[in-house]
Amino acid sequence: MISEAQAVAVRQAGLNPERVSALLDRAGREVAEGLLPAAQIAVGRHGRIVVQQSYGQATDDSLFCIFSATKALTSAAIWLLLEDGSVSLGDKVAEIIEPFASNGKDTVTVEHLLTHTAGFPAAPFRPLDWLDPGTRWQRFAQWRLSWPPGSRYEYHPTATMWVLAEIIERRGGIAFQQFIREKIVEPLGLNDLYVGLPASENDRVVPCAMVGEALTSEDYKRLGMPEPPVTEVTDDAILNFNNPEVRAVGVPGGGGITNAVSLALFYQSLLTGSLAGPRVWQEQTLQQARVIRTGEFTDPLFGKLANRGLGLIIAGDETRNYRGFGRTNSALSFGHNGAGGQLAWVDPETGISLCYLTSGHDRNGIRQARRGVAISSLAAVCAQPGSP
Image 1 (cartoon, rainbow, N blue to C red):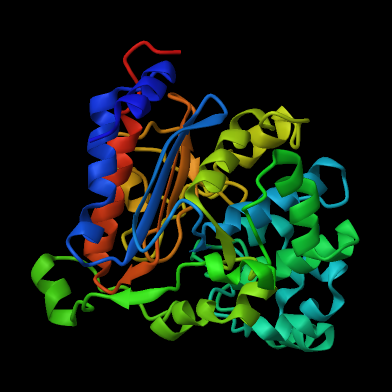
Image 2: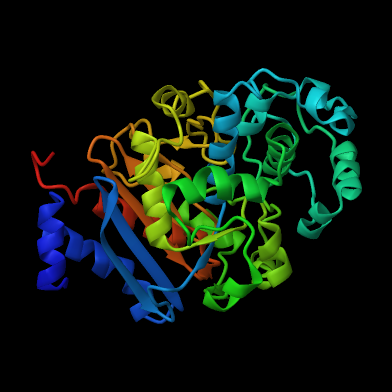
């Protein structure tokens, strides 16, 4: 249950206290049951946080690795370069990063990178290789295409974001971590949002932990679900983000470190281009970022529409739960979740933004997905009917 003080704030924001209470109870369920060691949730509306709560090992001062939810931050930095004309969607990557042109990659564009249609979903890259420019460029040159760029959609867990980070540095003139900090984080006043974690903040991060048992091939058959393919998102890859050196790199496709409050506020800023301070993005930029650019392309696992914008996922039709949203989200909702069950989205129809973070990465992917859909579904209906 929420406190009376919380209920007052919830009502003032036009939200329903009973529904918010149900959401908070659901968000803490797996921690109370002993499955997850820690979790954190925040709900935003009208440019501010309405309610927040931490569970288990987490306090309100705790930080979490947000994994692929980081992609929205890196993409939002690219939007600024698109806005000022330093980059265009049709730019060939090879014309910006010369070593990238090898092995047929000369036709890959910036838009392909942002929409996961670039054709190299399994390209390897060790996070610490970023620290040496020669090594990273050599890695770009070694990558090979799995299919022609622009011909299909397949999620690229990290590869395209490494390339976008290089583009930010070449066209933005400073390190990509610094660009995100100076151009996005500081103007929004989100000082607890990091892409590239300072050593002084490491003690605040709740360590990643693997929990639960993975489903077997027989389990998937019995449930009538397709078995997910093996990708680079392994247990070892997840636990690698407990390494302070990796956190310091700020892996652009998966290494952001923050709390639920900061990420929920970041999504509030994507509705208006700012929070309390100056505008970061122009309205046209935000609208263009939310245009679905993958057409009829579907994801290869479930065969559902990919619905990709410029680094964002758009909820779309009634199959939106396959894209990480709640069943009650509107079709206009957009965001980007992360491995292990991290949730981050905003719904323009209600103005509600949600962030749910956990340090426990459930090996049971179906249970994890169902938890995410349940939490998002409860959050999406928290607005009082008719509230502005």
